[in-house]
Amino acid sequence: MYYQMTPLPSYADTLGLILLFPTSHAQSGMNCWDAHSAKSLQHDGGGDSQSLAGLVKWALEEYNGDPEKVFVVGGSSGAMESNVLAATYPDVFKGAASYSGVPAACWADSPMSTPMSPDLTCPMGQKASTFSAEQWGELARNCYPGYEGSYPKMMIVHGTADFAVTVNNLDAQLSQWSNVMGLTFSQNVTNDPIQSWKKIVYGDGTQLVGYEVQGGGHIPNFQGDETLEFFGLM
Image 1 (cartoon, rainbow, N blue to C red):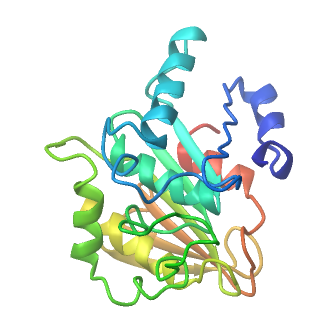
Image 2 (cartoon, rainbow, N blue to C red; image 1 turned 180 degrees about the vertical axis):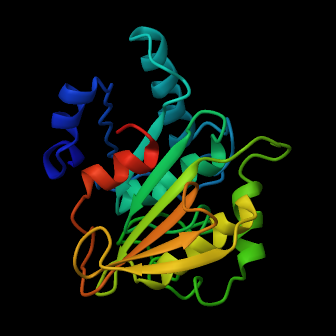
């Protein structure tokens, strides 16, 4: 899906990137990743997160990739799983970009992580408005108990008119990762990188940024240059 939705393949040609476009049919035939089960929310727990990390490790060896330049980008369910991967495999991924996602482990205790789930308190924003930054941070840290290294840089993008995953989850993701990284809010920058986008900067902006898209719906338009520049690939 993301292969067709974004210009990433053209960047691969010009920048010499290795791209992987995995997909999942694990939940009721829907292309949604497992962002809810104990297996997927635990480092080496045997779920989708471990499978994806394993795929990355295989590609690094097969194509002689640079382990210091491993990044994940996703929209909707892919954005949710990007947060999960940042929490469960911070030793593998150096950065993540989440377009219309939710915090890592937001779906924990739900029977599934799809629009068909009987428990939609995560994507609809009820959890976002009740959990503190410290609670969100603990959920992320608990995905890899005992890990003491650095966490991936995070770029969080969300539209204010998202009907499927409410914009409350933008603040929740920023709260989670600012707590994990020990960063504080610095400034807002209007119309950056384009009209109607507001950039939300934490620290010096190199490790955590958010983008609130005024009037934007589910999965805002992919900003290739901005994303890859944030990753340090351009």
